Amino acid sequence: MEKKTAVVSKNANVEKKPSPVGSLFATIVIPLALIACVLIYMFVFGNPANFEGNDPNNHPLPGNYLGIVYKGGWVVPVLLSLNLMVFIFAIERGLTIGKAKGTKSVAEFVRNISAKLNQRDINGAIAACDVQKGSVANVVKAGLLKYKEMQNEPELLKAEKVAAIQKEIEESTSLELPMLEKNLVVISTIASISTLVGLIGTVLGMIKAFSALATSGAPDSVALANGISEALINTALGITGSTIAIIAYNYFTSKIDELTYSIDEAGFSMVSTFTAQHETPATKPQTV
Image (cartoon, rainbow, N blue to C red; front, side):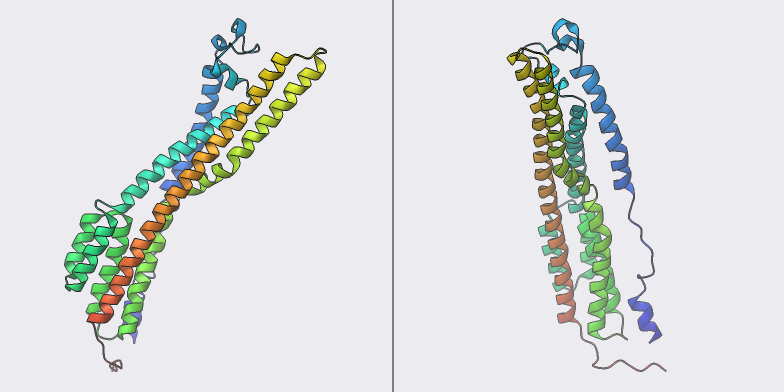
């Protein structure tokens, strides 16, 4: 009985901690993106050459969109940084998920593993994982190593061996998949708040425009039109960032779901093959 306990829980006491790389990346990128966009707002959009009389306090030159965006106010650099962060994190997630798939097609890899298991070529299946690489291959390899270990374990019933293989696959999956989902929370947050931040800038701009109209005495249609167009810049930037973030988030979650399905398919194939190919006695041998 002591041997059984040692076999089933051999990997359970190994402490595995997720890599902090994803969190560190977000910690670095977010403030850098904000600083970069503030500098762009001040020195590119706020360049005096974009305004009448070379004075940023005056109206933008006709058709000068850099000056118009600058007049959107302090919310503009925040919105620019949100848009920039969406692009950066989308690229980072794309590279990470692409690496997690491995060197070849995931579907072809799973079929190859199933074929080798049916041929009782467990070493060949493990070698295929080494060639494939990536998160899917790591999970499958962990299950295959436990599969191979259970082949040579005489003291456990078949059901207990199957349970040990399933547990190993589940533990490996729980360690690999969170790394794929890291930083998706940033993209989902931007999708939620980008439009709201844009509306804040729009409301502030409209308040400013109508306040100027109320204190100027005679109605100034040109000033009012400029104020409204400047305020709507914030809405445009906010909607753009939110749209891109929603598309990116849904795309990456669908790709992660595909990888999860592939892992489940490979795990089911391992369990089914083991159940079909291996028999154990109806009762455990008594240990003296």
